[in-house]
Image (cartoon, rainbow, N blue to C red; front, top):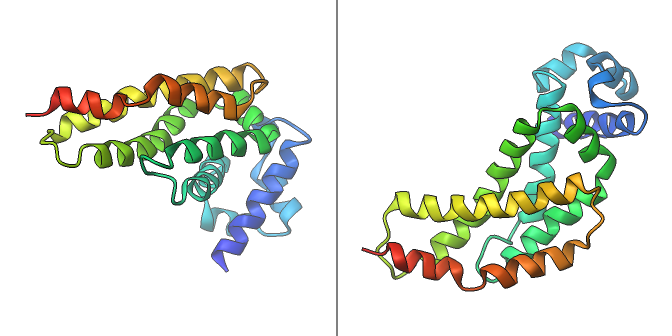
Length: 184
């Protein structure tokens, strides 16, 4: 039941974002559109930004499901690009109304999860310190997020498949070689 209510709130938020900017939407607006009480909203979320973050986490979790390996990270990244494009009004509204730092932090977190799984897989058989694995995953995370932020800022005009292919071309083999340079 809680999941159904959260999805209904998410749906109302996305509908309202087609009509007005995020910073002009109130909890009351969402509740009226959804047909629930404000108390019900606050039972599930602290505020609208909490709802936005939950919505993003849910969508990205589905997009990355099963795509956190050396052989599938490209598919996971492409799924994120496609998800962002499919939810363009939502994403652009959030991008314009929430601080850029908050958007970047969120993207860094989800991208790190994807890359960390790849780094761990590539580190198999190597003796690499935990801090060095974190560093390698973090380094690549900044490149991935930078490309995505430029793409969003450029109104998502470039083809996501082309972008993922270019990223893959640039870093092909670099996960393992970076880890080998850190091996004890």
